[in-house]
Image (cartoon, rainbow, N blue to C red; front, side):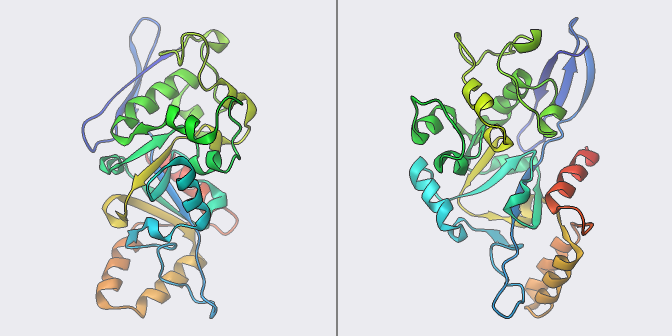
Length: 277
């Protein structure tokens, strides 16, 4: 039974992912099946036509277009204006367009936390009573440059496999079920234990990336998922734009993967990501 994990990475490359058995022999090795998801909602104008805004399929994902609720959360946690991505999870409640980004996203300036920062700031995630959201965030947030190592250690410590993390867990505290922690969270007890036990939703234990500043969508976008209806509305809108905007849309459209009407774009994006790796 493979019980240990290891990863290696080079700048702007998806880490290789290996599983070892108890004798130290490699059981399996592959590209780490983790992509970054930004789910957004189609915004319609009063005339019921899609608006070419940052909320749809933007040329630039711009934090200045975030909702007041997001701005409030950033103020609570002392975060600069940011764009948010979940590692390995596309939250369906965030909208009907799922954008899938590659590992080179990590080359941007930003931070990461092992939970949804907005959920923490708005007290939707239960944390130990001795903490307030700002203090708890500071304990767990890491620089984006440290993400892969911290993420990997987290998965190796709290999940039986990378697939368990991707397929919604749930996570385990350090040392449970006879599997010792690879790197114990704390000498006394698991630093994530309260959060794991008191929160059923995966927002409480899925890693989130906070990219500080804007981000050119096409640089790292691997594909996007939405319904055919939404895609056709977007395409019709871009046909009426400038030649430059149409050229940009054609480049993005080549990355489109349709989603059946009875499936959520977020679910399609997650499933196809696993199949691609």
